[in-house]
Image (cartoon, rainbow, N blue to C red):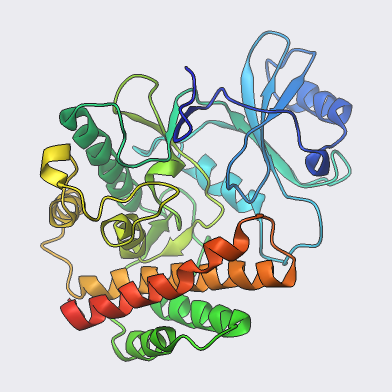
Length: 358
């Protein structure tokens, strides 16, 4: 299946970037010893995209495809790019209702290719970056959105204790930690005075909800981080688990719903679309269906979670902008992307005024 830019096949790869090259012969030897059924020789391509952990497609001599994710090169923060945590959660989800790739092996020995890495199965399908899903009927578009929400609910319904994920994150107090973390990161990367950001920090601290619910959370749950079946609205795997932890599931839901409030020009802008005509559920419908699937009667203080998600994204954008100014950003459009911080903060503060806690 050919890619269309915003909808691409998981079969599409390019040559390995120079900065991400590694000893391929050592990886081949490792797979021959540790991956059952592997057949020499090994061929390697690299997936492109916004993934912070370099990701590669591996194909053996028999045509079997695998995926490898490894830590990136350079000096890293101690807790960043923890591919071992990704491997742990994906492996734990095997046998649950959550669609996940089969894992094969985690290699913590950096002498093999220079970095920790893991290998999992390759899942053939579509990655949809444009969540308006052009070129399909409203009925098919609705089904894609609906199965996304269903997949998120399945994840949050998993008992993390039953699948061996105790200790995968702290229990309780997740929202307070999020406000503290992103406030600190924003302050550390501040370049201008953004009155709305200062107002949001104060408002979030003053309106903190009770936070005693803990589930597995993805941390970056959106359409782009799902692999859909090549031909139908079915999710085959949830991917990019680098922000996964234990936390409040409503943080995933709110982040997933930001598209109703913030139009990302690199993805799609549905904020002014006739959702019903296009087959996209409204925010109220999407949230209500999630509540039904997770056994909730509703979500008190829903607006808090939306505002926190906007604040978090604004803080991340400000960090990207600061790195761009300092010449340390990994993306050439960092300065342009970073300018979104003000816009996101303004949207968040507007929600405070129009909805309150919600």
